[in-house]
Amino acid sequence: MAVTAPEARPADAGSGACPVCGTPVYEGYAYCEKCGHTLGSPTCASCGAAAVDAEGYCERCGLRQPTGRDHAEIVLEGGAAAVTDRGLRRSRNEDAVALLAAGRSTVAVVCDGVGSSPRADEASAVAVEAASAALIRGLAHEEAFELAGRAVTKLATSVDDAPACTYVAAVVRDGRISLAWAGDTRAYWLPAEPPAGPPSGLPDELPTVPSTELPSGPPEGPPDGTPDGPPGGTLLTTDDAIETGEITAWLGADADDVRPHVRVFEPQGPGLLLVCSDGLWRYLDGHPLPAPGDPQELARELLRHALDSGGQDNITIALIPLGELP
Image (tube, rainbow, N blue to C red):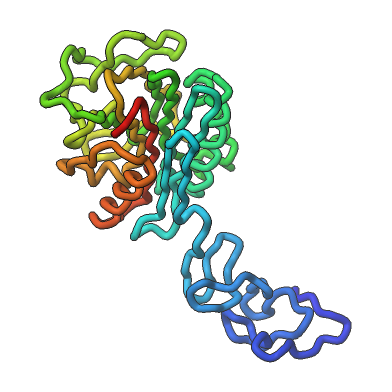
């Protein structure tokens, strides 16, 4: 029911009609009596109507309003950089990224909201916040993954209303990279001087081990049948997905008992760690990666490549330098 002032009178010129249905309204009304629109809503960036609802959509033209997540960049003092972008086809950015540094450690977490789940942008946001905070405090990957999973699970009202996201986290410390992931977010190694051939001495199997038992020997490669990555880079993770592309592991109340893959990688020389969502890596097949250089400029270059290639999905890129780069 509409709420009126003691002496309702026509609103000021230009605001005397509901911006959605055009029904005359009076000063002091909180809602339109005909369509129920909340009067005094934010103004749409496209059509100019004061008709933006609580979910961020304009009730007149339907546009999802721009947010701070549509495009954001992070640059750390040590050179690490990240960029996330809505892309060209999505109405909102359901990716999220955290990039933190403390002491000798740098932490990157990238989560990609599962598009078929409700409020996927909220899932990715709470997951990166919980995981990055845990990892920068020195907690193990398994603990950080569990905390992120709990945060996402709390968003659900039921198993039929369960926000979900994929997950990849990296901790770089003293020239050593530890990784944990679930889903199809990925990590790549970009050496400053790419080897002429495939890495030597790599075992056939990619180990999954507790972070308390991370090996300290030479880096392991992906298992047989897993691509090494685009020219100039080596894929460090494996996808939890079937041949048709559907993911088989994620964070959320409707997920099974998912445990993260965990591995360690010790580069043999300087380079860049690339952590990204599928909005980038789907466009990397056969695309030579630029030589490692300034992480922020390279992140922007990779973003431009994804947008120029179609920008079908949200795009998130995090780059952490190791050693002295050209």
